[in-house]
Structures are given as structure tokens and as C-alpha cells.
Image (cartoon, rainbow, N blue to C red; front, side):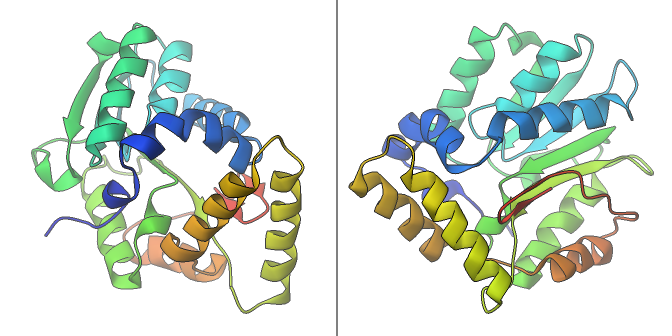
Length: 227
């Protein structure tokens, strides 16, 4: 069974706007990827092979690849439009020779592959059902070497809590202070309301634990985004 995810959410129009818009929507978006890079750099060998699940437009690969010239990557991205943009961005960054790209899902990879690390940045919050999230994380765990790190970042939170309401209000206020049109503002938060499956942080960590991952380390927090 293919894992559900972001494939249906990113058509040609959204893919074309993604790189610009995501930097406005997510506080410290570029800093998040730099933090991922330095975290992995502190843990991995100089010739690490990394699985990038939901490669998007290639930000994980470009940030880590530029800083670590001997790292190689296997990337999967289910959206045709995002995949095409990712390929262009990786080629422009002169990283093409170090990246194996697959337009599809991790199910499409050879089960014999084992990786030194994996990332899934801003992916699993599109998976609506908790059991599907569990299966998604479990599939990634099966591709990792023993004790290999998995870096994940998503929207998290308990939608019924006062904390959630405060943070989303603050986040909306930040986004509205930027140079965005009323249409773009409403489209962004309608997308979040409709397509994002929020899970409280403690339950999110429990799903990772149940999927086969061990010690959890919180390294990033920006309003409702956690890594």
C-alpha cells in the first residue's frame, strides 16, 4: 500500500510558488534546514548516504549537499510537479551526480537499501490517519542502519488547547504582517485548516517510538512547527 501524503496537495501552481511562499509561512524555514544540516553533520560519517522522504523542491538536499561534499542522497517525492522543480534545483546547485531521484513513494525503493540517516521534513502532517502515520514512520525505520538518526519536522499541536489557539493566532499575525495579499493569506490558512492533520506533540513522539525509533531530541520549535 502506498503511503498517503502530499502528492495530491501540490499541483503545478502550488509547486511553482512553493519556494517563495514556504519561506514566508514557516518562521526560520532556512534556519530549520541549516539546523538539520549541522545536527546530521555532528552524527554522520563524511561519506554518509541519506534517505530524503518527501524531497519537495530539494531544500534538504541542497543545504546538506553543499556543506558535505561526500554525502550522497536517495530522494523520493510523489508529486510530479514538485519532483520536476526538485530536479531543476538540484541540477542548478550542481548536486545531480550525488542524488538518486525517485518520483514516487518509499515503497518503490529496493528493500535491500540501508541508509545512514533519513529526513522527512514537512511531510507526515499531510497524513490524516494516525495509523497511516505509524506505517509511514515504520517504513522509514526499516530502511535505516542500526541506530541511524531520523530527522523529522512537522506541524504539531492539540487543536482543542488554549496553547494551540494562542500560537496559531500569533502565527497568523506574523504572516499577515508580511507582504502577502488577502487572497494568499486566506488560501494559506484554509490549506492548513483543510489539509493538515495536527497531532499533539506527546502523541507524535509516541508514534515515532512505536514505529521503532528510540531517544527523541527536540531541536527546533517555531509556533506550531516542531522538529
